[in-house]
Image (cartoon, rainbow, N blue to C red; front, side, top):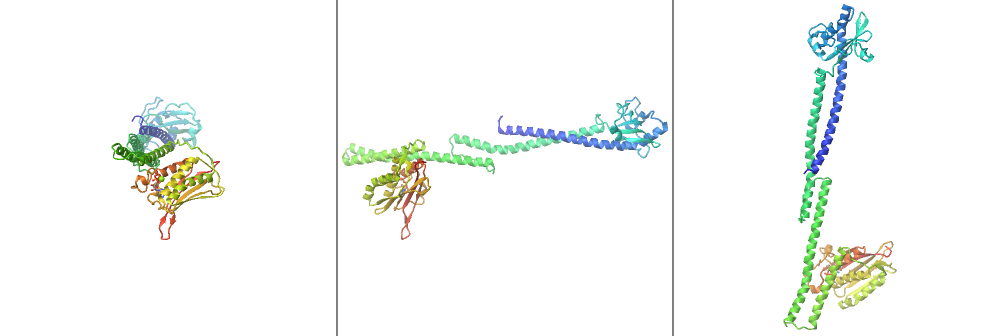
Length: 484
Ligand code: ATP
Ligand code: MG
């Protein structure tokens, strides 16, 4: 769990939240300070304008600024560093109309700076600027003190922002605290919501992991149910498809073993029965028995050969001895050799060769084997007086040769058609071994055609009789031309 995806995602999320909260806190507190300072400057100007008539009265009374520091201190309510004894200014006169206690209270935390006509500081409730010349900018933020129409000084009222315990600094501190705690609360909420979201993302991944582990342990029926319409949902569907094909392949493997065992057992049991009969003296050991034993052995040898070919093709180890071959002579010799058997069965076997066919790049022995499989099938399922036609053609510009073998037999049922190329598939399940093969013929045809880079298809029925009934089968395949 220590290195789980959830913790990694949450860690990354936490870093993003912390950065966001820090930037937000910093920006907000800076903006607040700026706005607050603008406010206090305006507030200072306001107060300076209110106080300046009182100071003008003071000046007119004394005709100088003598003792003004003590007088200023009565307004600010703050001890001054100039040595003058502090007195609360509550209730003292402000001159024109500003004599209430509230005004004095609002003044606390404000610093009063009085400059003479030349701009030199002569009193400062903050104490540090006495004797200094004020900048023109600072002077312009104050209020001029006019005595008989002449400017005798300037009063600047400015907040003591940085002095701890003053309302201004208290205000900023509490605003900063509020910003920080709201950032903290937002971070915790984001983390909780993030954790819930991440759990939602991670739970399908965990499901997939468990299903994969179960499949590894051999439970091929494991599937996952991931409903989300996103990449994880797609991954779940792909996983299920993979599990499906694994389970199919496993079923095929099991069926294959069962089929092989079944197919081998039948001729072996027949041979064993014959041999035991001979041994017990119940059967004569004559030519007929030897022929029967030889027929069973031939069947077995052929089937083992077929299986070997299929397994070699599966493993990609089927060696094809390809050479440039003339299709005309190849198909003529195949048809010629099958001709006698067709004749015995009363079926006409015809070859239709397009003139001037290009050469093909194939293993002639394998092509003979696959065409023989097709002819054997056609001969088996075509009644007497029927016809089998092998058609070989090439379309201009096509890179392959088209071969088809069409018979006038009973055809293949639509339900069987999709499966005839499967191993051990026989349309008539009850057919006795003597009348047919093991269902490997068309599987081999497909393997050999595909090993040559071609495709094979089955079509049935292909003809319609006058009474409307349909019949006949056509197997078509392609073969690569020479030079490809
Ligand atoms: P094997 O070829 O191994 O001796 P098989 O002939 O039964 O055995 P396939 O050649 O693979 O096996 O054919 C599969 C099935 O397809 C056959 O059992 C048969 O039912 C059907 N089939 C194949 N060719 C034809 C055809 N020309 N007409 C009608 N049915 C056919
Ligand atoms: Mg066959």
